[in-house]
Length: 99
Image (cartoon, rainbow, N blue to C red; front, side, top):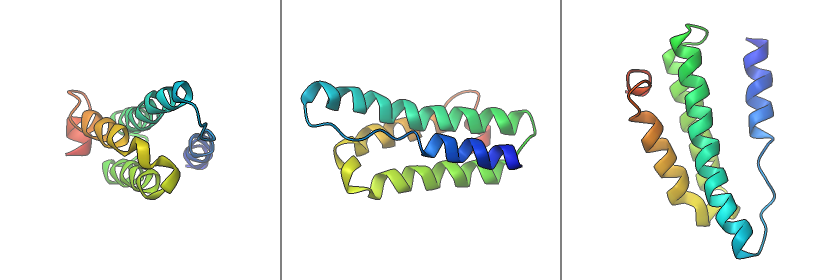
């Protein structure tokens, strides 16, 4: 469980600083989508391998999405964050974990 906390902290500290130009903005759209989808996929894999409980994975993913959604710096990327959340929760492999 110590490793899970360490990796969670590591993932959360990887958020990039926001840039002002359009090219950086486009990259951040993809980054935020990939960030949420990636976290969801990692948690799903941990549940499938029986390393964490399904409820814990759902809670961590939902809290991560909420934390990013309420951050005013991520306001332009909320739709990407929500799309990633919806896509990972409806993924064929992970649907039983997140439903």
